[in-house]
Image (cartoon, rainbow, N blue to C red):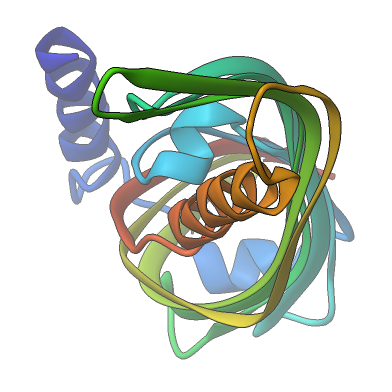
Length: 215
């Protein structure tokens, strides 16, 4: 990861070199479509499922877009183990206030679908249950960053800070097999784990890097 950061910082310093700098605002005004991918970020949803997206330039001051990413992951918090699919889909708008500086406003739907096993130990008794788990989180994000555009098509951006908040969330489970005395205990354990996954979906982030092309 350190090497990746060094490479990105080197590229960033090259792009910001006055001799190579381009007029990003003018370039945005001449382009219509943006294709890009968030390749790296100190942001859990981005690290799990880096999104690729399509955007439309509305003049030189607004970029409106959609993005999507997905991945299959394994989770283990000690009491609950799951094999899950995580999807990260959203819409966003970037509002540029000058050459490259911009405010990001986004809404994402981040879903987990999993087959999970929950274990609960009380004294010498261990209870287990297997179940399907679905956690859904709708997340609003505000961010600030810079995005540079070159007249030959390259776009390079960094979101310096991302702050997120849950708009709504849900966690549901269906118990398939269980040795719990009360299946409600198994359901509670699983849904608490789903609530944790939803909280992860709304974690803040820094240093999200996007690379793309404008046409």
